Length: 285
Image 1: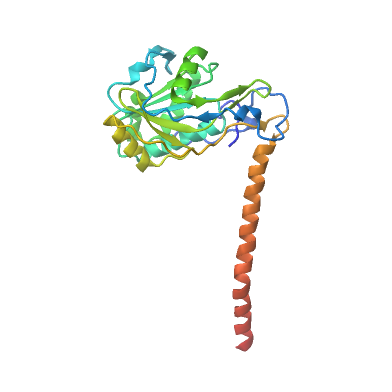
Image 2: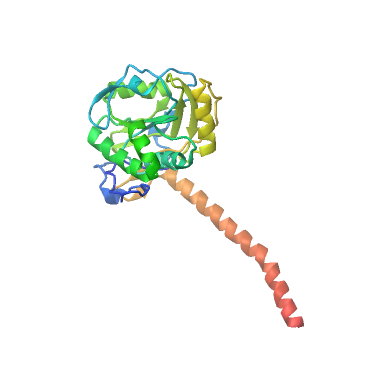
């Protein structure tokens, strides 16, 4: 999974955001794609810190620009927690798309049975950007859910010190590459107990509503889940100057192409005998 820092496109009201691309205006970038696994990815991972208490004394800014303590959003309900950056054109968008898709079909509603806290790990991002991102996702929810989500889904930004503490607390290891102006990071969301203890990790970009429901139920009862298998999707390695992916990504694309080709060949081999039988019957008749 690949992305770079780029301005988010304008989405029509009520539609799910789609991944961006360099066409929407990438930040200036320099350097060439890696010829192998990028050094930046070597330390990129999400460690599961189950039962870890989030540092609720941290200070962020909400989407209205107000300074808030993280603890403001904990204490009564379980919380779905995500670390993204709002200008991310691909993987972070897919993470939040996966979240909102699951929220749409959950029997629980944001702001009623659970809350959502989304924090940008890019200290350059502003409350105004957080507010515009929030509007996109609130508008994508059904009308009956929007009022609760507006009060229960929080889009926060912060400075480097507070971001470093929260990312460390949840085991979110990412890397900013100065040469390419890209963040390298993996994808997951977490669920916490009402008191702010990490109880579940959900990896990837698609989150089963059923699994998320059970996670919320267990978290509301202060139960801590078990360690889950990690599915690592990385956000890195697109060179907007050349319009090409790095070699690590190209290997994945080539493997996918080979699998597709083998599937086509297998289908042809399977259909050939049937075609011969049909031709033989036609000749006999």
